[in-house]
Length: 409
Image 1: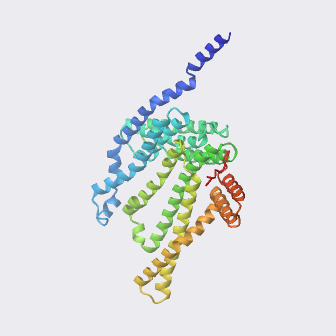
Image 2 (image 1 turned 90 degrees about the vertical axis):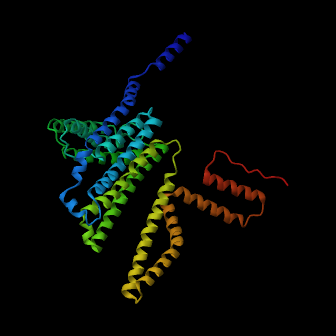
Image 3 (image 1 turned 120 degrees about the vertical axis):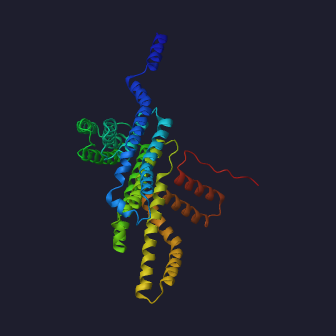
């Protein structure tokens, strides 16, 4: 009887389930889908290059010392950065972790985002029916899969459960719009954008709920990486807008230059948005997750220090040149020396404040080490030193077991 039961269990365990079959099909289909997406981008490249050279751009190119060919080459290279980053990260995830459903879905999502929304296909009027059908299909898929990904990441389950019906409703709505656009050979309608944005906002709320109520510690680390990528992207967007306002005040003509806006501002936006796929790749390929708390702490510290030093430098230069009778060169030199002298003290103070608020583990560890060093000054008995040392190790590292070995002289 025992032999029969064991044989049945083994036979059942080797038989592929329906879910395993679907995963196998999805794994085999991924290269085909990726090649189709790349083919669609290659097919529309001539029309994309023609759309770059508007009458305003042609009129501004001589002042920018660029030929039409040079401008188109720079624009194509900038447009391909986000696509290539998404494709590289998606390929790495597919090669290393395609057997995991969440990783495979993430790979599909990055392909859709990089070769759909963030590619040459987005918003382009295409006369070729085949290229237009591929363009509309991948753009529509990206609108749904972005929010869908945040609703199931990192466990692969919808949290909360009712959110699956929102994804289904969004997919049906986008499918109806996409089918109509494919039939009329026109770019995908703007009606799908509110659906995609709404799904992304729902996914962001689900990530907060999941982090606070559902996620385990490793899953929270993964979520932190994704949130860090999105937050870094938003922070760069804000800095770019603030710099744009500053440029408007200093040199209004440069702000109104469309060539400058496309190449400089557009390039910075593209570089900023690449934070998201890179951080998603780190979160999914989580064999050895880096200490995200340390990364966030260092990023906040140096961002705040840079902002403060820039403010101090600008204030000193304005004070020396506008209020005090100093020449510009002298004011710049004095301001530079003052900022250099302030860097280390300011960095230490900001690092202490940031660690105390955001990197509590390191702050507590530093406090424990400082307390241990203070106790050592008053302790002469070896047994007392051993006790203090073990207490500090337990407080900072929390090991399962700790002991002190003393070499006998």
